[in-house]
Structures are given as C-alpha cells and as structure tokens.
Length: 201
Ligand SMILES: Cc1cc2nc3c(=O)[nH]c(=O)nc-3n(C[C@H](O)[C@H](O)[C@H](O)COP(=O)(O)O)c2cc1C
Image (cartoon, rainbow, N blue to C red; front, side, top):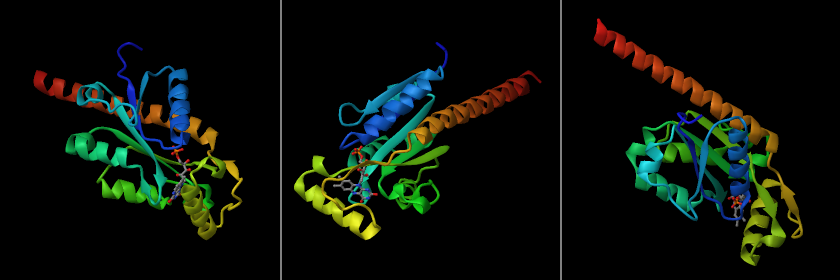
C-alpha cells in the first residue's frame, strides 16, 4: 500500500452534507485498502505539491442558489490548466438530484453546466441528492429553499427535515473510483513499458 499514491478528495460544504458524503466516500475507499486524503476548502486548500503526489483528484461541492459553492470554482480557477490535465472525478450534491429524471451525471443540469463551464474532462462523475433541513436554516435561506421546493414540487413544510442522499450509491461510487484508477494505472504502465521497449529496439 506504501507505493500507492493517495487519492485526494477536495470539497466545499456549507451545511455539512457534502462533508458527510465525502467522509463516507473516503472511509469506504480506505476500507477497500486504498489511501485517501480529504481537503475541506473551508479549512485548507491543498498545495500544488500535495496534488502532484496524488494519483487521482476528486472535486465535490453542493449547489446553492443555482450554483456550486464558490470555493470550488475559485480553487479550479487558481489551479488553472494544470489541474485539467490531471485525472479528475467530479461530484455534485444538490436537491434537484432527488428527482428521478435529474439524478445522473447525464441528466443533472448543475453537474453538466459545471463540467462545461470549467472545461473539465472528468474520468468519473457522480451526483448525489443532498439534505433538506428547514429548521436549521436562517430565515431567508428557508424562504429561498421553500420557493425552490415549491416550483420543483418538493416539501415546503418549514419543519421538514429530509436526508435524500442515497448512501449505497456513495459506497458504489467508491468502488467505481477505485476501478477507474486501477484502469488508468494499468494504461499508464502499459504506455511506459511500450516506450521502454521502443528505446531498447
Ligand atoms: C439556501 C439554499 C439554497 C439552495 N439552492 C439549491 C438550488 O438552487 N438547487 C438545488 O438543487 N439545491 C439547492 N439547495 C440544496 C443543497 O444543495 C443541499 O441542501 C445540500 O445538501 C447542501 O450541501 P451542504 O450541506 O454540503 O452545504 C440549496 C440549499 C440551501 C440551504
């Protein structure tokens, strides 16, 4: 395990649900024997040197008022083109994903727009429904979200608390990330072998 570079999970979270989802993902990846590092952009932004030592970078943020949290977009802009050349996975957490037709990377409008806007070419993508917790919000957040729920046919009862996250899907995504990373490593090793053989000819 020592020679396996860790996966870096870089995320932003406002109310804690994305943090919980990323902690679960990291726990599951570790349980499968793979090293992983979590970076909460609210506390620390990983340096380029740290990211260079990562085999794979997972980016995640929730949607608020129609957009992914600003710290993740800022992080992407700051890292620039270099980050786009790395193996990336992208995760969006939002309440629109609670709806059947909007819960996949292909059908979730926020994730699609995020990938397009930042010109990403991710090797893995996921969208998870988040949490609704009216009693925990400030009054204007509650008002805004009740409005969003009203137009999207969700609960508007100001006491409503719902965890819409499919935790089994989070666990499945951990397996998927490991599979994708293994395939990428095999491909890179094959390329390396091929170029070494060419030099020997
Ligand atoms: C004030 C507010 C605005 C939100 N706006 C949206 C939105 O525009 N679209 C959406 O699908 N979900 C929206 N959500 C739902 C969040 O994406 C969801 O609650 C998520 O779990 C929040 O993640 P966090 O706990 O990591 O901050 C909003 C939530 C709040 C509190």
